[in-house]
Length: 263
Image 1: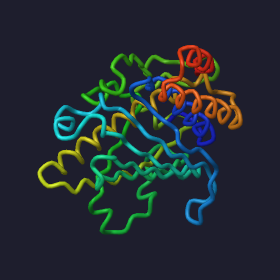
Image 2 (image 1 turned 120 degrees about the vertical axis):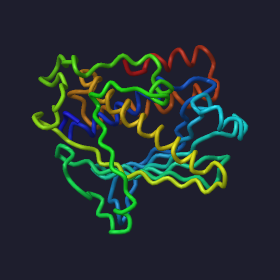
Image 3 (image 1 turned 30 degrees about the vertical axis):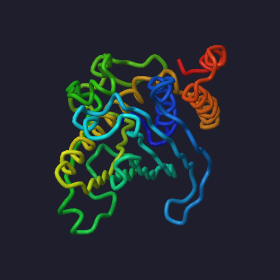
Image 4 (image 1 turned 120 degrees about the horizontal axis):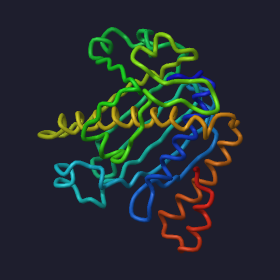
C-alpha cells in the first residue's frame, strides 16, 4: 500500500464501513452484532466485532444448488489489535467450514519472509501470492464483488496529498509504503466438493483483498486527516444504520439514517 502503517489504520476502518454501506439492503448485506474493545493475552488490546453477512447472490450457482439460499449466512468474528488482526469466518449451513485470516501490517514493500513465524511444516504447505492493488486484472469474483468498478490507480492522483499514480514497479520506489501480510487458512472437510469449496473461497478472498485495498487508496481524499475517534464515530453511526436497514426500518427511518452515510 502507498501509505504509512498509521495512515492505513484509518484507511482500513473507513473502507470497511463504506463498503458495508454499499453492499447492504433490506434483503442482503451486513448486520453488526457486536463492536466493542477487547483485551487478549496473545493479541493485546483492540476492537472486537461480530458480524453476520447475508450475501446469497454472491455465491456460485453450484453452491446454491447444494444449500438453501436463506441458509448461506457467513458469521465473522474479528479481533483488530492493530497492527495485528485476526478474523474467523464460519457458515451457518456448512458447519464444519472455517476460514481464518491472520494479518500483520509491516512498513516494508512486501519483501519480508515468514513474518508470521511459521514452523517448517507450515512453510512447506504455504503458497505465497503477491497482490498488486494497481493491477487491472479481473476475474469472476472481481465482477461479483464490484461489477461496475472502474478504479484505475495507474492514473489516479489524490487531491489532498502527493501520492500516485501507481505505475509498474511502484512498490520499489514509493515512500511511504507498507504491506498487509495475510495468512489465510481454509478448512472445508466435505467429501466430494470440499476441495472445490476451498479453492472458491480462496479465490473470493483474493478478489476481496484486491478490491478493498484498491478502494482504501482510491478513497484517500475522503479519509485523509480523520482521527481514529472520527472514524469510530462514523462506524458507530453506520452500524446502527445497517442494522435498521437489515431489520426493515420504515422508509422514513431509513431515509434519515442514510443521510449519515459516507460519501
